[in-house]
Image 1 (tube, one colour):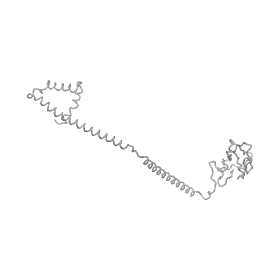
Image 2: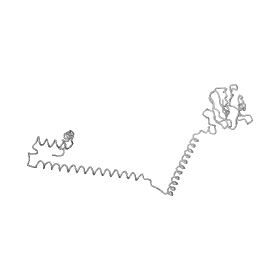
Image 3: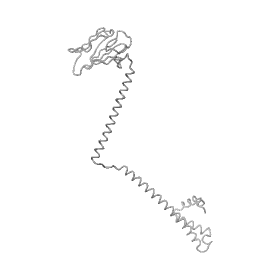
Image 4: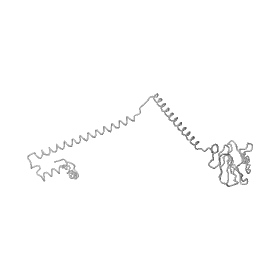
Length: 254
C-alpha cells in the first residue's frame, strides 16, 4: 500500500487511540481482539502465518521509526552545536583584552591627541563661519548706516553711562549708579530745561549734561530713584509726532 494511502487513515486511527485510556497496550488489545472476532486473520492461513505477517510489519516499521529518531537526534545535536558555537563567538568578541600600563598610557595620549585635534578643527570652523557671517553682514550694511548707533528694543539707544527708550508720547532714561556707592534721593541731581538735561550725583561730575533735539514739557517730566541703584528719568514729549530716528546721535529725542 502506498504511503499516502496509509496516512489517509491517520485521523480515524488517532481518534480511536485517544479513546483508549490504557495507551498503546489497550489499543493493541482492541485491534487483535477485532481481528480474532471479526476476521479469519488467525485461522485463514497456514500455521504461524499470522504471527509471521505481524513480525514482518513490526520489523518494517520499527526500522522506519528508528531511522526517524536517529535523524531527529542528529538535527538536534547539530542545532545544539551551532547554538554553542554562536555563544562562544559572542563571548570571544566581548572579551576585554588586558593591556599593560605603558600601552594604556600610549593609548590615552593618542585619544587625547585626537580629541584635541577635533576640538581645534571645530574651533577653526566656528571662527571661519563667524568671520564669513560678519563679512556678509558688513557687505549688506548700507553705506549711509555706517558709523551710526544701533537702536535698542525700546526704539532708543544703549550707551556707556545710560540707556533710553521712547514711546509715542514720552522718553524714559535709565542711569545706573556705580555699585560701590550708596545714595539717597537727596544725593541725586536732575535738572530739566526745555531743550537741556542734566543728571548726576552731588560731589561727582555730571553723568549727562547735554542738549535735547526738541523741547520737552518740563512740568510733566519727573524722576525717581529705583532701589538706590538706578535713576529713572521720564520726559514728556512736547509734540506727539510718533517715533523718531534713533541712529546717528546719542541724545534722547522727543
